[in-house]
Amino acid sequence: MKKTFVIAVCFLSLGLYAQNIQDQLKQITTFEEAQKFIQENQNFDIEFLSSIPEIETDEFAKKLLTVKTGDVFSDTDFTYKILSKRKILAFRVSYIYLDGNTLSIKEINKTRTKILEEYKNGKSFIILAKNHTMDSSNDGDLGWFTEGMMVPAFESAIKSHKKNDVFKVDIPDKEWYYVVLKTFDDKEVEELSFFKIRNSIN
Image (cartoon, rainbow, N blue to C red; front, side, top):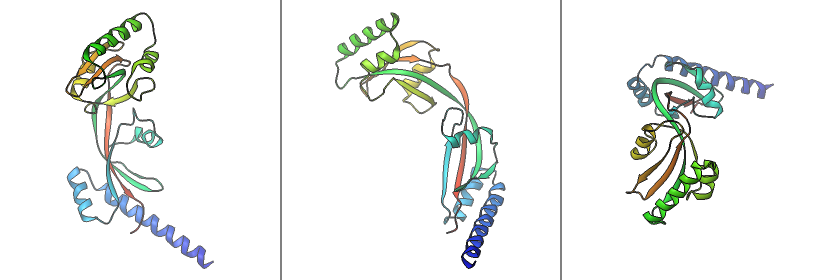
């Protein structure tokens, strides 16, 4: 009976702690106020994060699809505060990477000409990527990524092409050379900024 009582008191304390945190977080409306809260509560386990729920595939990202700026919510381990949302462009391409540290420019251009001819003749880009790419990619698909995630020359080339275009990208200062297939139209997505606090009493 005594053990049950202690456990019940612990759960009640944690519940009150989480509710108190939620009440405090609801008052925060700016990054400045968030920074002040963190400064005043340095014993809390707090982490700033960002997420793009429309292109991320984990379960937590799915939960973020319906949240609004200012929302506060909790799960078993953490309490979350959504600070802001902003629109950002997302892209998706497949690629074949050729390493300029291993191949000469002549070899790279010869290989890329061959790849483009085979693709034009109906060979799958996935098969071409498996046969030719010089990194660990299995099929060349980069998945969705957003502005600022790739080197500027690569992103700029993607922005200047439309869906189904196949094109070359050269980044000679890094010895990176690519054949790229743009597999989707660019799309505008929302990036969420938020922070989380561990639901525990220190």
